[in-house]
Image: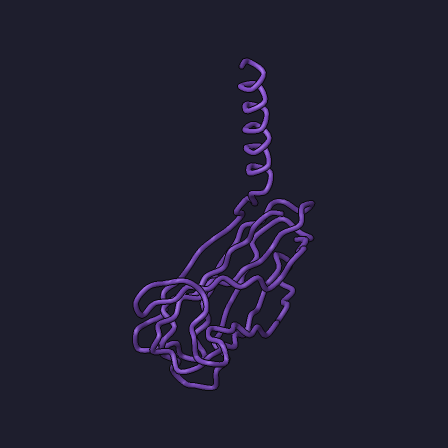
Length: 157
């Protein structure tokens, strides 16, 4: 009987260690709301992330919350990353918010949906300091409706 309890304890201990080791550490996370009137194409959403770890690899995510009134199945975003030394990296990211049949992706209830998109994996930050992430909508609409908020998340691997 004592051996069975000991074996159960070992199994539980290994499960807890396994769960703990699989979790990533959130280095930075922030979301910003989009005005109800729409997201103007020239209005950049700015996130300033303080990064001190220049040795570890990271994962970069975009968080998008949209309403079911959003008129498209995808969302194109222009991303600028300004390094602490003022160098700028620019990228275009496509976020698929609905499948080809018009079914919304992500999770949510009612008219709101939430999606998290991995847009960069195995990222190494070469310098300690503040990295500025600026996101613009790239949908060729002056004021894009249906996007409730956008966010950035940086996880340490």
